[in-house]
Length: 427
Image (tube, rainbow, N blue to C red; front, side, top):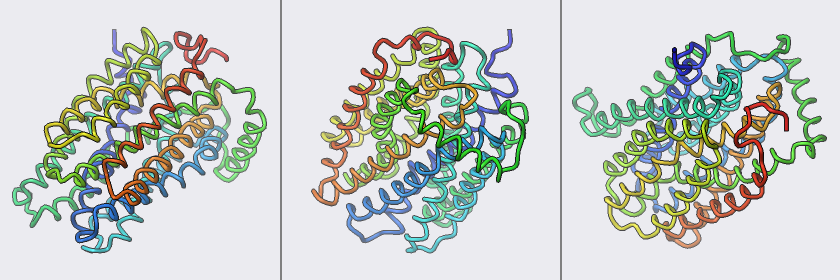
């Protein structure tokens, strides 16, 4: 029997995660923080560059958070999933490529380009995530969600390996310096993202049942639908409670993901060692995310979410005490075991809660909460670093988010019958 993973529309959908994860790993997590801190803002205080990097992350997240619900409602009204995904892919790809050409001390332009590319990355996820319930076969939503994230970890890791070799041995690639290698890596990400996005962007079988209408009409109707949802919000209590929990714990996840390299540099760890730790997360994440997806189909996605929150809370306290690179590797291994799980299981559990015919709209709210969370986390860490002058204190502040998320999730899922129910059973 053919695996559902390799059905054409499923594989094309998962391959987009392979495509855009190159931005998340090479640019967002590893090389842009390195480029920003060691080259563009060289000579500045470590806490100052941490603050401005956190601001770039926070502003892009705020912009997307404001737009996300309307974008989702727009897509549901006009079969615009693929078109909107193509637009946001371009918004991500073009400024990523342009990062290769910024001036050697023009950190302001680099920060703006990075923020715009981040809007493209996160905005595309509104439409990509909402396609999950259209591509997943009955009873396989957790494993398909996990497959997408797992493929993303593998794809992001493979390109990151190439970029790391470019950075470590630039002469092998005809590059003059490690800085030139970082710039070239931005170009490779842009090409990778675009090429592997094409199979999904060419799909026409993943569409809403509503008649196709123009983007202008879809925008107007989507806004009206969004207002109606806000007026009817009390009908969706289980969804609201879960989104509040998700807002808190995914804030911590995103903050650690974005600021891990910056934190390691602030502690004085070698850049090459930090990059190796991030690569470890990617390769560990591939099989573990598949495993949690399999368990989600058979037991409950909630198990994976609670386990991951516990591990992340432990990681924040562990990070405060780190004194050497070996301990950073231990922390990276722990994160690799659960990072994909908490992302994939949160997405699939939410997919069980929402009405299938309004998936993009509700995933717009989902991404809105995630992005508002990404506003709070980097701001909290950046401001704490500035006020205290201590990066260790800054990372500890993130533990509050995991504690709050876990408590809210207990209330959100108490007595839930959706842990084992079909993905679209009515609430």
